[in-house]
Length: 317
Length: 317
Image (cartoon, rainbow over all chains, first blue to last red; front, side):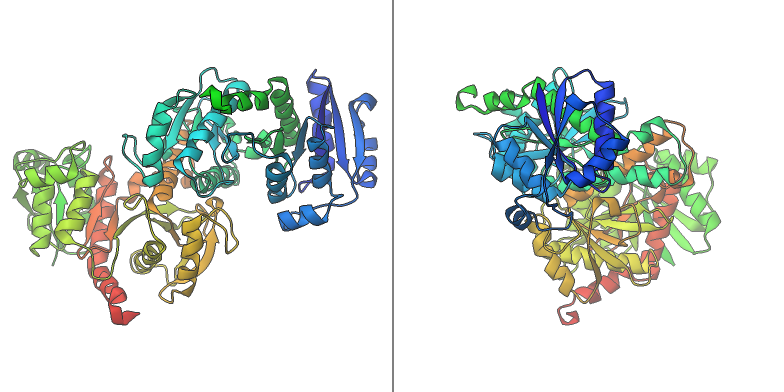
């Protein structure tokens, strides 16, 4: 039985939307899971009576504290040891849950993932990616989107491997193509980082490198995994997110525009840490929570973490 | 009388669309100008007979060669001395025209601007910006969009001054606000470059710095001048350009979406070189050429280059 820890206190609409999302997941999916609802029991109970989950599908794990969105991540994690995020990481580290999901303080989630759970051996820098909606309705993965603002070529090369494994096993893309986000298509183009990363990606036999991709290719289907440092990736992601707000406010109804509602995708896991950790958007609603639970299940069922460990074992090169 | 050199051979739809654009400009604007139509006379004449310009508004300057779009910029400029681009820069350097416009080989235009015309004293790196359509219908300026893929903090600080002068005198924004494109709003956020650039921008009394802006702010009205290195800027610009193609192909009709048709804005000048040089998009059509002529006129009438020279004079600090 898959045991998933769900932070009940994280995100602007928790615990209500987290429970609604859990309910949607349990109703729609056959996967037998046990949800550990981590948070303030007195806040959780009334919502559970309104949206009851099957009795055998969950347990409440009381946590008396909450890390607020604006708190300093490291300090908050250290001081609030009975916060839902701290408890979640304690349970994950102790093997009491198989994955931990939160839409709470992003910084605290990152710190917890990197320091309580730690990077997989051989992974220089874990990374966070984001789904990118594409013209044909499929999803691509942009990686990194802000965890690593300054990168070395070797980091980008590793993001390509991590992203490819995620795309293959979670997005079910058979043989994902990796593109290096760049300012021109030809080999040799780019800033110093992109120029130095290109040959590493080209020689990397763990990925299928398709070459440079430009800004105009990001929302197309040119590459399934799009690699860049977290500065550019973050700016690109937030720009793409804003497209939805801008055109939705103009009352445009369009299926593809709706795919730019990133909130609906839920979070993307921290790739390269030893156990599944999924960080959601602060504005996550039921659909986002449902999708995060679904991604956590996929990660556990496909043993994505194990596959990443194998890929980064020294003898795997 | 303002004399503007217009490359008749540059761009996918030249010389036809260049002449149509010139005609539109002359019909719509009262500015008395003399256009120097630089290119193959035998290609220009038939189109002029179809779209006749007033006899006193133009001269044909025959150039026997063409630098093609895919040619190596430096080599092409050196070898094809009678190409329309080379002739244009010769005329500009000799003072026979006051501005030079081309939608041709971007690399050759950059090389010509930097080496035939040269940077203004004190300008470490000239830059190219791009118009960014904003929610309220106004235009902002993103700078740099690809000329300088790797930058130092001092470069970004200068782009802020150059962009502010352009925004003030050409976009008629009274007191333009400058934003540093970044992955978070708070001071101290960012990659090493952004972190080091922030204090320079903050202390720069030649600009009105409003702080960091995120990807989600680029298409809003938060900052009039948005500063970043050319790698991120290029990716952002091309991503924003692709929004038009993607949603237009879905038959969405919307005024604001039409503003994402960047082609209609024409080119943005190379900022920081000693004379007005405007580089257009390869796919420029009549409206783009018209707007490039208009921008060239504004630059000359407002003496933008002179104002930049003053701003970068050592004693101006």
